[in-house]
Image (cartoon, rainbow, N blue to C red; front, side, top):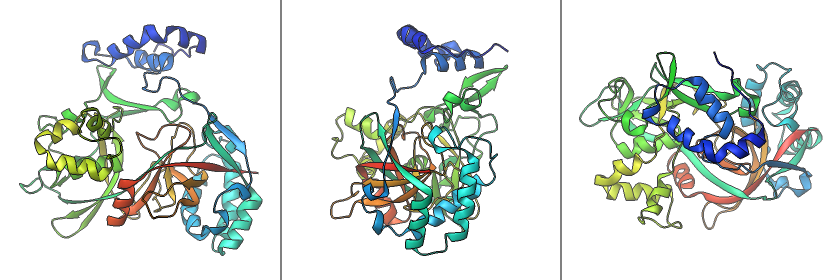
Length: 411
């Protein structure tokens, strides 16, 4: 096997313009079959990623007195979410770093903190606050010198479905196909932690997987082997964005579905497409307005939804849920999706976010990084998990707020 070559940054800069067309060609059908070596080296050389020049994450030591609302948060609600992360941390090799953020220390440090926390988490808010202040120090996270960034919301979707296709349930939610190969690029280079690609191996070559338009086509080879069949294509689209859902089955039972892989294509927000086509203005875009447009324009809905080539595959989840990317059950209003290439799962984060709707208070509370998403990119970027139900859907659908956050790192 040919080696994967780590390029110097000077080479990256000088060759970027020349090699970007090559990257585009490599992803085109005319270039297939691809070798995994060529694909990975292309990613390493010019980062065939839509972000041209990522802004670096910066940490600035702060104090708890600088956290807006710190004294008012009910930390007993935080403890349940943090304990779930601690259960995962307890099973990690202690000698490893605590994710990609060097300042976060080692797994061993967090295992010690979690062990202490498990003995005191049943205490009241004042005692929990004293423990956190004694063991952690907040650090303001900025994108270079920019303190604020975009915070959105997501929820556990609600659908109606059946285990078999029927005239009233014609839309498949696909389970992960057996020929899908997910490549964690962090297994090859530490600098690529959190980055991943997906494809199918054909003749010992990794080829890009089909896009959403091909996967929802009845001619797709795996089409008949769906996990569940639902009644509404728009509901099926939005559960792709949320990553989890509860399906009310036609036999009266409930099925919880959760993320089980993706097709490797970059997520594209269809709200952006509707703005580009002049169908919605920037100020009008929300989950509710996008859904309303799709329902009012059924003859164009598929074409608009297919401008997002990403597709999420699902599995049935038993027990607590929904399950986030950290592999644990999410906690409403305490779990935060972050950029996995910059921040580790299990990291406590104090957030100060504008109210998602007029008349509501700002969100100022301690949360935990426990999930990620295709659109969650950048040092100051978060997605608040609101839970399940109509209120959660309403809050998540309208949330497009500016905010900032602090990482709580071990002293």
